[in-house]
Image (cartoon, rainbow, N blue to C red; front, side):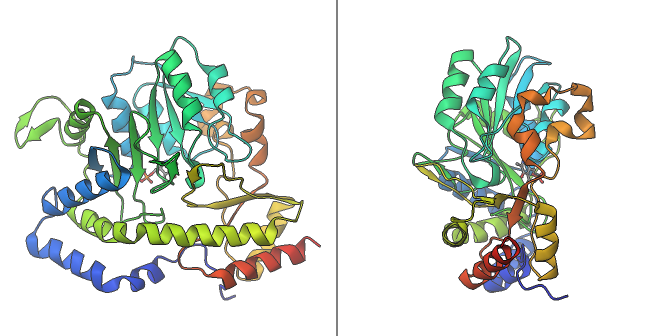
Length: 369
Ligand SMILES: *Cc1c(COP(=O)(O)O)cnc(C)c1O
């Protein structure tokens, strides 16, 4: 079976910018700038400028970014942190690993991001923070979340792993909460050639703490002011990321055009619930997720036609074995705990064109007759 529409095509992306990438990699090797150094500094500066924050600190991956962000915020030990029930497990793992308690909130049925009403209903005296995951690339309702955070004195960590370049009311995600965390896992909208991550913030003290925690508690070589860890973005990944960052907006535009095409072609079919994009946001369209009847059958038939799809995520986090210990009341998570069996991620990326989208849509519609 040959693949007609790929879900992800990193080789194609590489070939489209090969000379720049090859030169960037060679340059890191020629300069032996593997850890720290000019390529890392350049990326941190450029990424901070792109996200419109004063500071950016490269770290080893997006999961570490959340952990280090939580550690740096001086939260009360063993406090409760509110996390969406529909996200990748990294968002909640970081909470437990830093000694806090995971509290799952439900998601909005249109954007799949944190539902502010659900968040509000879960706040207690022990709540210290919330993790606003801009899931699939759609920004959370930050005005409502910030109002709750102000009222109850909570910190906001924006998990931007799927939303590089997305904006909310003209502001880049990652510049709105206390800090923003990013993953540069290869398949993300901005990905490197291995693992990578970053934290953005406008708070200088926080930035300094993050820099220490991610590099053995030091700012200078052997002057360790506290115990930290080794979680660094290396020079090679930084050089690759700087190169790719220059193409990101163009890639995001392409994603948005393809998403528009899906919406135009599928909008009249009641059996498919399309993503609903809120006003005043730029959606980064990391994923194009629909809800569809007979999801598994449709997915199988698409695969037989050479069309790759994904499921994000097949099991709502709160239902996973890893969270049995919470003894969760699913009645509090009606959207997240019921939509997982209907979610389907259609192929979307700068490697595709309108014709590919048309092929996918025609196939889906023929199955739904
Ligand atoms: C990918 C992802 C992460 C984790 O990033 P890694 O770099 O793989 O550690 C965290 N949160 C979300 C929402 C993600 O999609």
